[in-house]
Length: 448
Length: 129
Image (cartoon, rainbow over all chains, first blue to last red; front, side, top):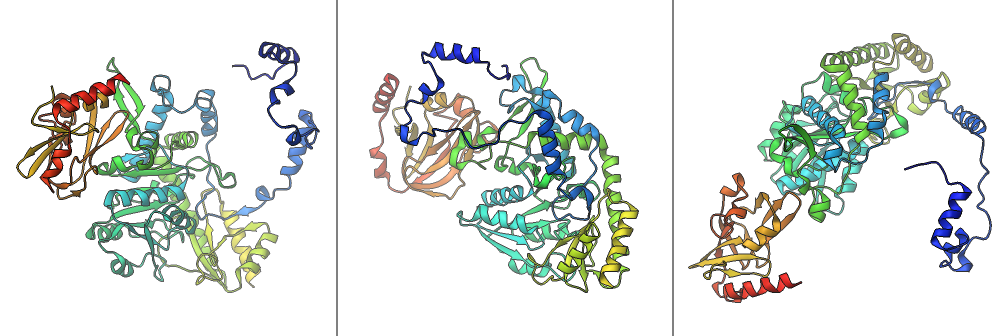
């Protein structure tokens, strides 16, 4: 199919074939009094050079490339190897549509199968889907899945689970008769185990906990899993910083039944919020309740290995209103980027990358603690972000730091009113020692 | 082709009354319509059902169909063989492919179901359309 626009000759030929003289005649069915009798009020066309100049001058108003950012909280700035762009932008990957016809989609399907395999390896679980939209909806789908598996209508959400994930879950369950109860956190910044024990009952389908949690602190997933299982509930692990899976023990090995979350850290730029990449994996027992697409490996009529979307009877185009989800897609291109990213780094590279995050965050935490007027709020072990409490109100600190060209952290008070004058500071491998020192010095100046 | 001792529903289930209990399955017509059956999701033993409530779901590669209970009753046994070999329903729908055994709430309800000859006539009517 040619995408070159029509010439006047093409138009005339088509009109003649249809049997009308002008394109306007085709709209004869639209009443005259609602037809617009003037040109649309849009600016005229620009030459390519004018257009480039115009866009460049608009883009120059962005300050993000001039600011030193320590922002995290669900979206993470990581290095993306050039090969990720290069391969994922190949026409063979960028142009094909959904792989519903396996006979012409083996390349796409193989990539999806590799992605699912990687998710299983990282989460320590048996089966993964072909991806969901992003972390928040992945968490919501996990809750719905747990409700279906257990036929119980109460779910416990850790308050240390990302605020927007909790909000999204509430939106999803709003009209389904599922009750969500929040489990408080302790002064250490982790899920309150005693409160969890009190809140768990035999009407609970799942406990949903994030690790590292929204405060950056690592939770005791094994303890949560054990507590949940005692009451016959599922244990759901949410991971917002997927890179942590490169270093921390996998949720599956710690007893989690479902692991889900955000894989943006694997080769996706921040992009002002998306497109991101939701992942989900579970124990084999629950495969028929998994939402989303599933790519399976099989053999063709000649006995050759092949890949195909499978267990389609879970999905809405067959099961309609009783489908496991109304999602009928996956984030194919984003999942591909994540696959290329992970396969480029390999297990060793991923571990090294994760370790650099831990080390730099630790260095930063020490540097910040050395500043009078700033202290680490929670004592628990962190991966690459941590909460800092300031002696001065955060808005003033933030403004002063921005004047110095630094975006130091995410304020927490809006979602956690008891945590006033605190911010979440994230340090990834992108932050150099000099940049971290600059943050510490700037804090020192501002808090003086 | 359709056993005389069975009774039949418009949704192509068969029922075999044995005292106060009934064996339930789907007919040869149904298994043929469904194609290769790959999975059967059975409601657990102990489930109490009204007439026409689903007691199982049958999946083929491209479809999902409910199996409705022909009469009100309680499931007292399910065919565990189906978990391993769901296609018994294709191979022997009226025999080894039975799906569930019910304790029938009211055996009078069975009288309202079609006899074999009526079911065969019903099938002919369907094929004409």
